[in-house]
Length: 81
Image 1: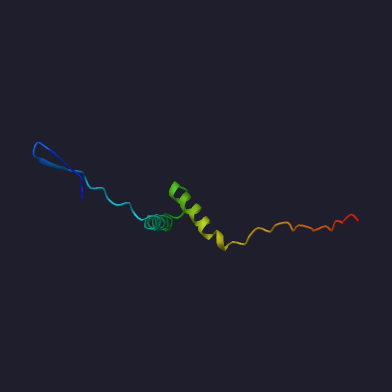
Image 2: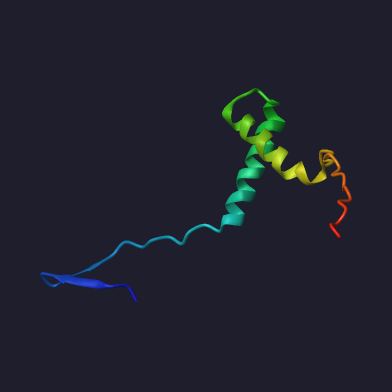
């Protein structure tokens, strides 16, 4: 029920506030926009192309080989008697 106020016999209603958009839908729309932008224009270097390259890099990160790390060498330390 919308809160109402009466002013000189007339009823005033608060303006309707729309529901917030679903975050997943917004992310999908943004990703679709960036993909379409890159496909239409190629990577022209604009801010949208830079966003596309950052997002693409993050999303494809899971498929890259991890950087090799130096192996730790275990050294046996003699215990005192």
